[in-house]
Structures are given as structure tokens and as C-alpha cells.
Image (cartoon, rainbow, N blue to C red; front, side):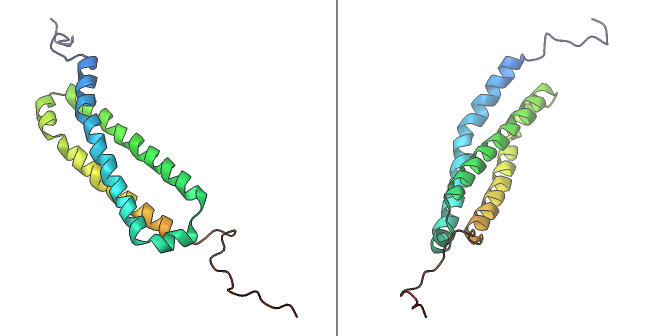
Length: 140
């Protein structure tokens, strides 16, 4: 074998790397989503009256879109994981990839918390009536 020709006999197949990556990351997605859901629900629970006053049906749609975005961003771990598994640091990476999971959960949790607070503290839209008079005002 010449020095410029890679030794492809010892490289793992992409299928094996993808399978290993799926086996590692997919069960942990449940943990990731659970942590984010607990954060969002706790913010809404502690600010319930404030949220209810400003609630719009669009907020539910926005939360759904944010959950989808959070899961798409979670998938970015696959890129780093497969790339690291293709390197010479494959075994070291497999023992320490939990660090990427931890960093991702911390960053996503912080973003979820801030966005949840923004939802509950958002001013009501122009069509939302926050207070109505208890008695009708007499006409002159």
C-alpha cells in the first residue's frame, strides 16, 4: 500500500457509525425533551395568571414550533458524533460524548427558560382585552 492511499480496511463503515450514534443519542432525546418540558411547564406554572392574561392561541403554535426547533438542534449532535467517530479519537470520544449531551442540555435549558419567560411576560396583543368594566358605563 502506498503512503497516499488510505487504509480503508480498518475504517469503520458509515452504517456502523450511524447505528452507534443512533443507539447513543436517541434514548437520551427523551431525557433532553423531558428536561426542557419541565422547565417550560414550571415557568408557565409559576407565572400562570400573567400568562393567562396575555394568552393567545398563537402561543401554543409558537411553543410547538420551538419544540420542533429544539429537536432539530438536538440532531446536530449526530454530525459531531459521526465526525469524532471517524477520527483517531474514536474510543476517547465514545467514553466522553456525554459531555456534549450535558453542554447541549444546559444551553437548551437556558434558551428554553428565557423564551418561556418572554412568552409569559409578553404584552398582550392589540385584540386581547385584559380588563373589562364591572358595570357598563352610562351614556351621556
